[in-house]
Amino acid sequence: MKKLVCALLFLPGLASAIDLDESGSLKLSGFYNITGAKVISGSALGNSTPWNYMQYKCPCSIQNWEYTGVYEKEKGWQFDQESLIGVQIKKDFSSTFSATAQLIARANNPYQGSRPTVDWAYLTWQPTEDSAWTFQAGRFRIPLYYYSDYLYVGYAYPWVRPAPDVYGWPIFSYDGANVSYRTQIGQSDWAMTATAWTGSYSQSNNAYYTRLYYGTPTDDAWKKILGASVSANNGIFDVRAMMMRHEETVSQNDPVAGTVYLLKDQPTRIYGLSANMDYKNWLIKTEVDRFEQKNPALGINNIYKYALIGIGYNYGAWTPMYTYSQYTTVTEPIEARSSHYLSLRWDFRKNMALKVQYDISKDKSHYPYPFFGDSRVLSVSLQGTF
View 1 (cartoon, rainbow, N blue to C red):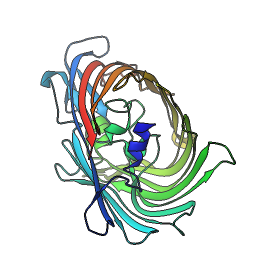
View 2 (cartoon, rainbow, N blue to C red; view 1 turned 180 degrees about the vertical axis):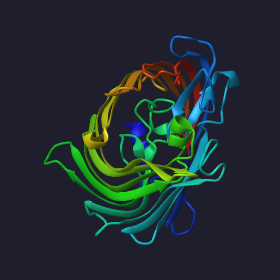
View 3 (cartoon, rainbow, N blue to C red; view 1 turned 120 degrees about the vertical axis):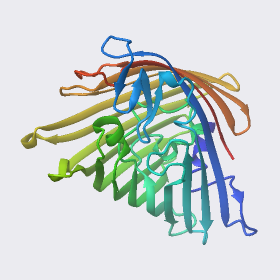
View 4 (cartoon, helix red, strand yellow; view 1 turned 90 degrees about the horizontal axis):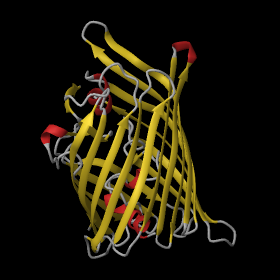
């Protein structure tokens, strides 16, 4: 449970943070990932001859879809795709009302360069100090996945990064509000949290679509977001179910035709289920998700299925782990991938871990052109909190 507890430090509680004033009402905490990776080998369509895909020279491997972190074999070791440092500041105005902001400076940020990104900026209110209800409003990460809330707090999980086959969509934040309710389930050891959220988010020149799929500046907007999740934990098992719907609009500006809509107000649903175990020295991580966009009248049938399963064992300061992940679409031209990961985490100092990971990824897409292809990638990362 220690990694989960650490992760929760960067959520609204901000336990163990640094006091910035004498009253203790202004607190700061931080985290960092110094991550490097090297593509050892790769091929596409059964051929290992180097190829170009979009702006990338392949063999290559995408390890971060949100910020288009792509490693290219010809560049050797790269430390500029996923490395980052983040800080979170919380101001308590009273025992029931606070403001929180989280800023992250990324080595690779197609939106703001080296300038920090405001990932979180929200107000929190509870009716009373011991209330089971919590209300928040502002900017948040969309909680699509089990690790969404602390995806970039690398110290909180066993891998260098959660499986990119599962984690990563073009829109990953929302401006809006959420409400959560926490309770103990009867006289049992189980605690339950139910959360609902709503909002929207628009992004001009979206990096995911522009850099990875179209090569042309493409805008994306998720509107009328409405989602809910229920999670339960008894200290050993942790399960979570999630469902969210929104309307997506994807557009490009043509100098002659004007705005061209690839999708317009397209109803979309995303479902997720995760079940994890942390018992004695054993770790088991599982997650299954489904993304649906259907409109028979327009010939739209975009369905993605993605999942991961991992098993690890803790030997004191060492945690080796094997993980498998995959994703696939259900209609042609199919986009699909499956990956195997061998990772080793070493907690060699308090609040600091060194991780090494070896990925073997197979591109199973049915595209007539080379996509990202197969790859073997070696990663190393120093991750910690302060």
